[in-house]
Image (tube, rainbow, N blue to C red; front, top):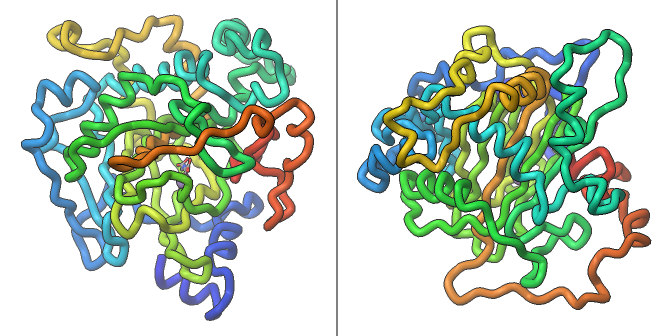
Length: 378
Ligand code: OGA
Ligand code: MN
């Protein structure tokens, strides 16, 4: 990648933008041969094995959230990106479906907030799953059918709800963070050397076939010494990890279903983006999803419930063309607190039509329930 990047961009240029556009192009599709694939990675000059702390999470604790024993995880670092850890699908076979179902059925529910709430009434967004499953359970008719609410979902926020317009969190814009996702996140963080991680804010991103996520840095959290975790499910994606300035050419890597990324240390504040999603390689396809039954020995101690056959029919149909990403953040360090947002500055219906454009790019951004993001853009 570094080779290609160097040959593509001159010094002083916005190298990130150029490479983002290269991978976002549809016609003709981009050459993906330089995209790093950690699922096939062997240690080299650029890819190094990451040291984990297997003692930080017991095998039983890991299994409760659907993870393999830490000693069996394949975790990598990248030369030149200190603090970046890529864990190649650490989930136990058959355990991803539970998390997919949480993303599609459970987490979009109130009191969590989603893009559809920006322009629809609470009663209309109350049961996104229930209002969508009929259409998604029937085989496609071949005719153009109206999109279901589930297919219109672009983001959900959890915990401290990110405000897309102010790019801030606030003390009084908070609902309880899901306990199961907190447990999953704290175990990943602990294994990566961050005991005591508190999952306080989550942004879930829903990518349809032509969606992309614009170039950005996640800096709204107050404590940047805590890692940012990212979980990928469904279709694969190209992820671009850049530097501290847009002139730094990014490294392109695949994120496949089940992959977990940890951005910590110096990599916590690097530019990154998702220019495109792509079908997973043949050898990955649905294998990990095949069994949505949990080993019975696990069922007592796990936080995961069995995914019913009906639920899995809908989830598997959705992820056949889509990707779901969960990012989990600790917002506050010891002793820190967030400001309150005065009620008069909270979003009103009128606010939603303004501020819908990204000043920098002129494009519509993730805020305001537009179809696109800071952006999932479609
Ligand atoms: C984010 C983000 C990456 C992804 O939500 O901040 O960078 O893979 N997501 O969706
Ligand atoms: Mn991000």
